[in-house]
Length: 436
Image 1 (cartoon, rainbow, N blue to C red):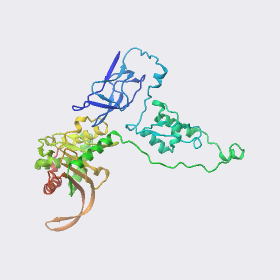
Image 2: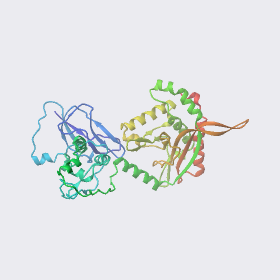
Image 3: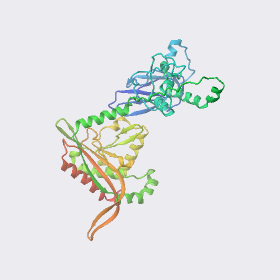
Image 4: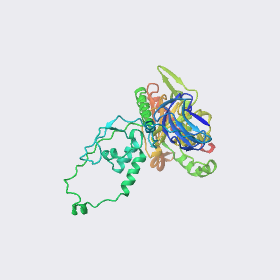
């Protein structure tokens, strides 16, 4: 029986998706829930499992093709024998061999890859335009394969395109091929002495941005063109929280199955401050200020080739343990490409924790349509002057930098200063005895 595979609905506001990569080819066996293809939208890339087991009978959409939700993109033979019908040779040659690659990009503009025969024997000079995926070019660059040699490798991809498999096969052959002794050959007269070889001049590489990087670039540029960015910074004493995590972290992990981190403390302190400063939990449409009824925190999460900001909705309704579980869940599913597009929208305020990369401080760009973003630096021990009723003393404290980026169209300097001061006070004076 033939089963139609349709473009799935990736979110409430998503009407189409882009075919990024087919993990299977026509004629391949596939099991139930085995990854069939990867689909991209303007918000997230997702791996799509097969809803049936069987044999791939037909693929109806090419990589980089934009397909409407609900349209048939493939067919699977789920029972009985699959009859493979022979096709005319010309048609068979036009069938692409699927290539597995790490990056999904729109092919760059065609560049002529022609090399004089006198420089690379056996490479025809045809002026033919060659296309290489970013992963092929990256491997070639790493292994020292020149453009001329790359052009000489027989390609099994569409229109003779060199695939990752072709290049790896060539490299394996190159490693195992015996290296003739040039000195011995010259002694026996097998080859004549030649002038010094012409060294190929290095040239710049032009690589098209992948889809995620293009979206990030457009979003960041839009934010800078829209919001009047201002940044304030402050330093917070995290010693009590650090000690709490050290003391209670093992029992928390044993009970919950994951580690207790500092992020939920920062989220909890920010939520309380946002409730006290509703302007910071707002957005601007033209000359209209929209105060959001819920506090939806967007958490910047670094992924393999970019950045995503999943959202924790209605944070004001969650207790501290609920925040811990939500932070963990979103971070794991985002890095595993299991986040849905709807979970990447609707934030009212964002937090960027670059401290996990051992960065002290930074000035993050506001995540539109928010009017504020909190930057969190790493925690470091340092000597600090401590004021007491008996006089000043110096002690070793665990200090952390906070930076607040806000839109000066709505938030003045005094408002931004009072907000970051409240976040600081919420962290330093948090009631740690009644968190759970």
